[in-house]
Image (cartoon, rainbow, N blue to C red; front, side, top):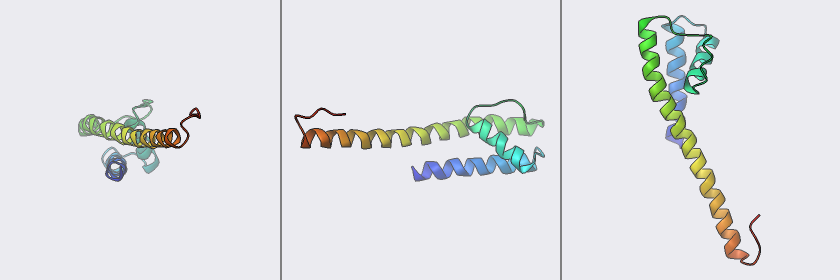
Length: 100
């Protein structure tokens, strides 16, 4: 989980820095565009304009969305596992009481 969280933060930083310096976006616009890209929202109000920026974005979307999905999947699995553990403990300690 920590590694995926760091990877997601690193991707956000790389995207923001790239779009600021290579595409000439203001910092806030670069961060906004990176967020919209990594979350696959993509409003279309900001777009890369250079060929290198477009190629970077293709790879960035593939790697970024995969990393974000893996991070969210891991968080979900941990939460479900914790919840299932609580249910099993409840059943073990209170066999005649229903789980609520």
